Structures are given as structure tokens and as C-alpha cells.
Image (cartoon, rainbow, N blue to C red; front, side, top):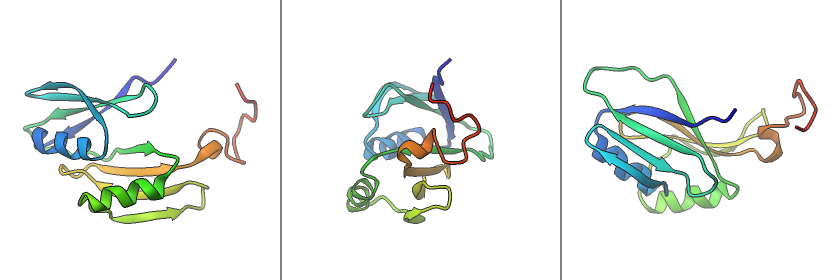
Length: 127
């Protein structure tokens, strides 16, 4: 089994598309009510769904990058605003926090092997 994608609700699709392209994602589907992106590395995708009704999205989307601090610096030069600069967390991830134009919470992070194999992992086996 593999996760296909995550879809986020957005209130302004064109503005959201520009924002995610500014972060470096590759637009692969662009319709009046839906957009999908590929991540620059790997095969993961995520999408945006234009919503006209009020919504409350409590989900957080995570994007991993080995050179997190450099990526955040480049994004800041492009005018991207962060709520939290890259910070080491107690759960062994380094995270920066921002929100997209529709208020969806995004964490840019680097966790290395701790993403799948933290010291407290229940199943220690490496599949």
C-alpha cells in the first residue's frame, strides 16, 4: 500500500497555485476547481480543491527537504512568510511552520531516519 495524495481545501485556487509553485512544486493538473502538484523529488503528489462553502481544515501537510534551512532562506528571499523558523523539536525533527493563502498549516521539515525509525519506534524491524 502507498499513500496517493493529500487534497487541501482552498478559497482562492489561482492564489494557492502561485503560492505552491513559489515553494517549488510542479503543477501537473490545472482546472477551474482542482489543481494537482508533483513534489520536485520522488513520486509524491498533492492537490488543491476550490471550496466555495465555509470550511475548517485542521490538517497539517508536511514537506520534507534535506537542506531545510537553505530552502527556508530561499523562500524568505521570495517573500514567503513563516510563523516559525527552522527549529529542532523534541521528537527529533527540525521544522519550519507557515500557512498557505487559505490558512492551511504547512510544516517544512527534515527528520532523516527519525521520520520512519525514531528511537521509540514500536516495530524496530527495518522492512
